[in-house]
Image (cartoon, rainbow, N blue to C red; front, side):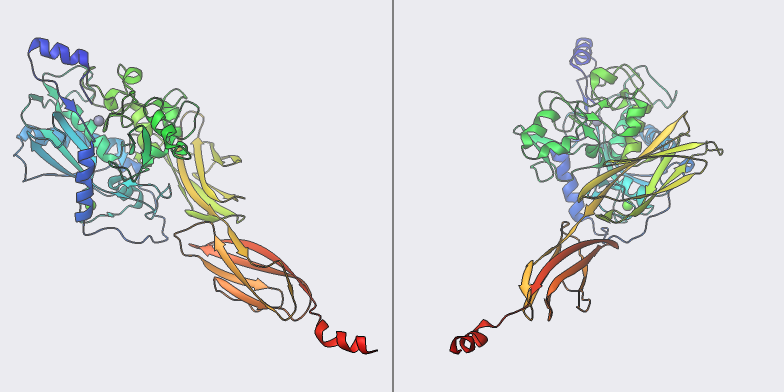
Length: 513
Ligand SMILES: [Ca+2]
Ligand SMILES: [Zn+2]
């Protein structure tokens, strides 16, 4: 959150204070994150096939705050005001795992001339309970989704607040829309806490090229936030990485919008425009709501410019973004969660269950609408959960969205699943009593697959590659069942076997007659 030039000019004319930025993310900070990442010793290890039960949203979240002893000692008012800001977030989102915050009170922020910073310390992917496969979740959100501290040795976010400026530490009123006398600490803390909780896009632009991971400045990509960013045509920005990443770069500087279903519902049925200035601004571009669109309304907490005063509430759009990323909202509205495998086999019917978490559910009719690639299932009912069976015909990533509504209010949950196919390579024609080798493969790399072969007249076997010999002619069918993480799929191969004729034995006998 930065001061606009108008605000800056006004401030300078008054001779009040120098212009300040409330920044959140920079290249330098990402380097810091990488160091923390490497130093973490209690890292999360292999996934286990358990989908944790959802939290109770009404319980909200608690925060454990540590003020770093490597920094200055904060005034008691700052400690109280940060406690207050975290208590507000604790009424908006839910986690059974306390959110751990390390805070530094210092005149020398890691990003230079700023009021404060906020960032996740670690990202993890494919943890138990992850809704979006192969996605880098900020650790606080991953902890909430898995209901366990996936990084016991480390905190979830690092905040910095500038120690040598004039702050207002006023705690009331809760919904404050007017500028404070001094920089409003609670507002700045709420803004930076949102970044620490995952309001972060990690797609970046370097030399007009768009990157998601493996760039000079950003490695933890895509975040859940990145996954929902679309252009004006509704196309996911990540789809522009190939074949020409300059297409991604161009959109990151002109046309990025948050397109999650909860956000769209909160934003008058349109995607929420993100901040995309024509010059890429590390730490500001993409990771904020668009200034012009949102500065004057209830949703201005996460705009980049701090010139419409303090707002002690995220607003419905930012809360929709948090919910789309996977946070359960604790502020009374409905939540839905989905469960099911993260990997499915092509052609295999697979169940998925959606569960409504909502104190407002009193037995009223709920319509569950499931949308997946090429499939929409609309299922009205009188239950707090719904189970569907889905089958995909092609491999690749499949996005599955569930929207539950009682016609007055609604909530959505999004999953991303990997569908894989199996294949058999080998000859399609052969002779009797010759040995032929067949090899199985799957479209999904990086996951161990097990194979079971069944073929006409052959004993079943479980190797990646098999050799079969048939003593009789005919069309032989070979079926391989591939299983990854319990999800099966099949591939079928046929080979036509002909009788072997030994001409070199009989031909001379015929010639003698
Ligand atoms: Ca931890
Ligand atoms: Zn920010």
